[in-house]
Structures are given as C-alpha cells and as structure tokens.
Image (tube, rainbow, N blue to C red; front, side):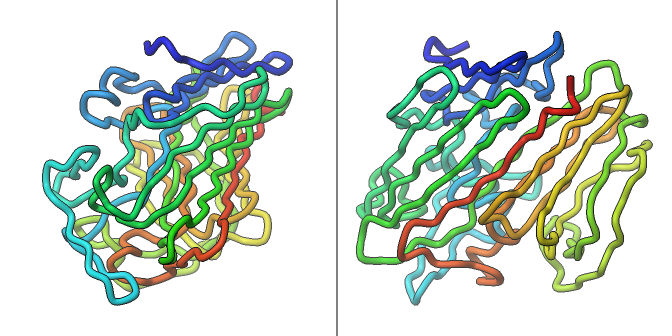
Length: 299
C-alpha cells in the first residue's frame, strides 16, 4: 500500500485514505470488520483504474455515449489512451479522468478530518478531456457513528464548470452471503438503460424496497430520490446506510452476481449528462455535494 495512507479514527471506527492515489478510500474498519469491498485492491486501482473502496469519479461518473461533448457551444474531444481515461466493455469512456490521480495536495489532517485539493487549469495540459479551470476540494470527516465526504468544486476561470461527478463506494457486510444481503431504498424514479447501459429516455416510478438481493444482477439508475435520501444494506444483524446530504440528484445501485458487495453510488448528474445535457448543471460559483455513511447500526 502507498506510504502516504492517512488514517482517521473516532471511537471504534477507522477509515483510511490515500491522497497520492486519487484520494481513494481504502478501508472502513470497526468492531473487527472491514466494510469496504476490496475487489482487486489498491494495486489494481493504480494499474488499471479498477474500482474498489471509495473512489471519486470526476469529471463524470459512469459512462459517456461517445468521445466528444459540447458545453455552452464549446466542443471537447476525448482521446483514447489519454492518461486517466478508461473504457467499459463497449469501448465507451467511463468514470472520468482522475482514477489514481497523484496530484492531490493535503491541506489538513488532524486525525479525524482530512482535506485535500486538486487544481485544474484551462490549458488542458493536465486533463485535455476537461479543460475547465476549477479547484476541487475533498474533505472527509470521521465521526464516532459515521463518515461524511464533502466535495467542493470552485470555478477559477471565466467559464462555468459542468457538474457531473460522483463516487463509487463498494460495501460489504462480512459473513453475510450475497443472497442474504437486504437492500432498503425509498420510492424513486428509475431511468431505464439500453443494452450499453445508457439512458434510453424511458422512466418508471418504483416503490420503496425492503428485500433480499437474491441471485439477480443489480445495475440500475435512479432519480427523484426524495427529500432525505437514504439507502441501506443490511444482514447478519447489522446494517450500513448511505445518506445523501446535498448536491446529489441521481444514484446508481450495482451488485455483481455471486459477490457479497453492493455499490451505492451518489451522482450529481445522470449518466451521459456531459453529452446529452440532461440534468447537467454548470457551476459559476462554488458547488458542494456531500454524503454520509451512517455506521451507527454497523457495530
């Protein structure tokens, strides 16, 4: 593991973050149990951008439907093979440009709170696929009963900055089989996806859920999340809840078959928003988004 791992601790809970490797969260540990899905681990994340733990997805979460996009009359082309850019099984750009990015600078670390910043300029030299000047601050606060992750994007140039970032945290409850994991979600609107996992334009209301995962594949996209969105995975007498506090308008739920892992993915825009413009916000002043992992029932 990287030498610059920052450990935050409060009460029985410890979380670990690696600023030099994309500010990724690599551990959420308490009461003798690790609650983050490790999958391929940090080495695979560095080598291939393989998601695990709690990675930031910026400047877009999920995938784009093509290799260029237009914002305010300005067209930006993405280059295959560019640093930080990876593709899905259909060859589409996925999960932004910051996987394992080593340019984060730590501004504060007091043992319970970690704050780090990354700077983007308009030249596009560092990230040609997103030439919008801004400052990105990621703050993590470890409390005795939860972890709060706050992202603040501040435009630093003349142009507004498209907002479509998100996170891809993987959670697990040790000792609980996948089929026995219970997922609780509020009533929402599901945005149906096509064969490439892109929005088809169709929508359907779905009621609140409180059911076991079973054997079925879970990979679904939602909006209209409610006034106080909260999403819980439970099993074995324990539960873990993700609360969306501000800024997040969409959610992806993902659980691969035969793996006891659930990804509860907060997103600030729908899939493919950079290209479609649907639900895309342009920040001209600081924009903040925050979510909290409630650990009060996970002990």
